[in-house]
Image (cartoon, rainbow, N blue to C red):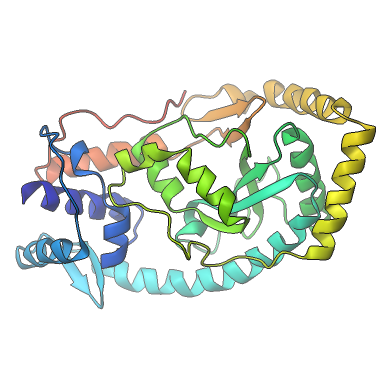
Length: 329
């Protein structure tokens, strides 16, 4: 089955760019939709791990890919196995620190969810890696939530500052959405692989379901992605005392200040955002509106997709259309 072979190989190629070998189950979960690699739009049916194993064995026999202790990588990239083992050990240490930080973020009013994102989400970190997070805030309180997260993380000394080019083990608040604006409108292969890899750290199972229910487009890029019942692999235990107190603070703020504080915070923060030259640089995206704040002025997306397309060509895979970025400047 050529379509399945190409889909598996394209997935391994994509993660090869990230220096990240994959297990069978990871190939199954991350597998790039075959419809993106062929002109034939018929239903491909169920693609099971068993079918994937058969194609992997053929690719290994053909010496197109290599295999070691359950990990698959492009031929000649055996070094990625040892690199991943080292990264896994480092990531375990970083996860302990990251979860400790996130525990105290419960002190921020209007916080509804925390997801680990980026390299942290797939444990593909190095010594210099920071902690990318996706935040879900209460609708109508986006800018207030950001302020309180800024205060809590600053008091702990773990917030990445805008002038820090490298900020090991610091929290990078680069994406905020609200519980009523869960749809990610910037679709691309890069973003799809990012969002299917999110790791819930502090968020209800109901909100996880709502988030992925609002982003069904992910399966246009990742064929087998499904929300798992045991999705929360690592997370913090909610502190009922803290959350009860924060709930009281929220009610007081809502009754006493209504939208005054939020309006002030929005105007103040947007003034700073729009005055920052980085907001207008090419190659990234900065968003500031009622339902979303995104700070990716220098995104790796375009570069990764260009390398991905170049490698597909080298392996004889010619997609029927160009994989475009998610609308970067």
